[in-house]
Length: 482
Image (cartoon, rainbow, N blue to C red; front, top):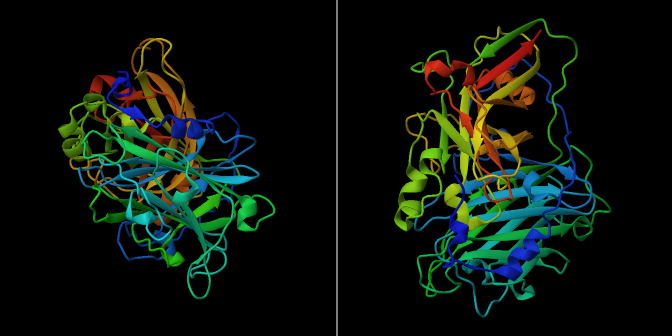
């Protein structure tokens, strides 16, 4: 199925803004590396990340930013998200990447009403549709000169009057002047009107490391603090709608509740050959083992065009027992009703305690993709660790757990015709995630999503709920240990 909503001429595109953002979408190879996780055998008490106000470091989410050489490829940046879809609430995808010179942070926001300040001041920027990006280059818990606050308000084109930057100090935030980029884009009927036909907006931050007082990019494995505040206004008269944030407990003055930004993708290394192996997948269609679910633009609910449905139903719909699923994203935020994430949980109790995980592989079987001949493009589909448990019967886009951290990805190609069952196997290295879950005595809870740019980017796979005639096509986890 192709994404069609971008063809609707009723949506007026902020062309100047979008072209500025698309200028960053250029290919380049990522470095997949970072600090290794070593198995400890220690068992931790599991606590979900969404407990507002709870800021213990082990509960806070993290983004592992890939490093690129040259331009930063939009579709290979790390993906994270927060918020909800409703007539009065906003959702946002976060994309992050870096190269030798700069950090790139991009927000794609689902928003029904787009409003900016016609007479902005630095003090009123966050009373309209705007983003605050918070960074602390020391990774500390208190405001200091290593703390930075970048603010950018939505507008039809790049505007210095709608940007501000502050630096932390012992007495609070102080306005400073350092170079950084903040390029907006939007999709909808028009800015600053009362129409209900807007779809969303975007903001792409480009922050030179030199503006943060650094001579070069941080070394691989360096960890900063990072948080995002999403500000919203739904009418000219206001007042502003309450902020949403990543992580949920974020406050601008407390870096101890911000998430973590690590430079490089985590790698897992175990020494020695494996001595045993297991394959885990749902044995029968009615088994409760290996629950999985698609949320958002599922194959049965892909790219719906009814305005009431997309703002009131789409985010709360459950498709937990569908026999197939879609993974999809793209750079045109107007097409967000096509976007879809996939959740899956594997039990690890078949692995004896006291073992060392050597490696682990997730395999999904692809049977199709969005778009007609020549339209679809390959996707860099990312695998992430889910922050909390969920239920197949109740999970939706709006209540699904956030990601705890991203751990890598794999290219998934385009199928020009149906390959026959069980489909084409696509694999992801999930050794890091399995070793972490095993050490904590937890099931392996994964999310798959993409940061794609192209239209028609959906990839279709077989789920755990497929009939017993296609047991070979069910998602499977293979683990080797010693």
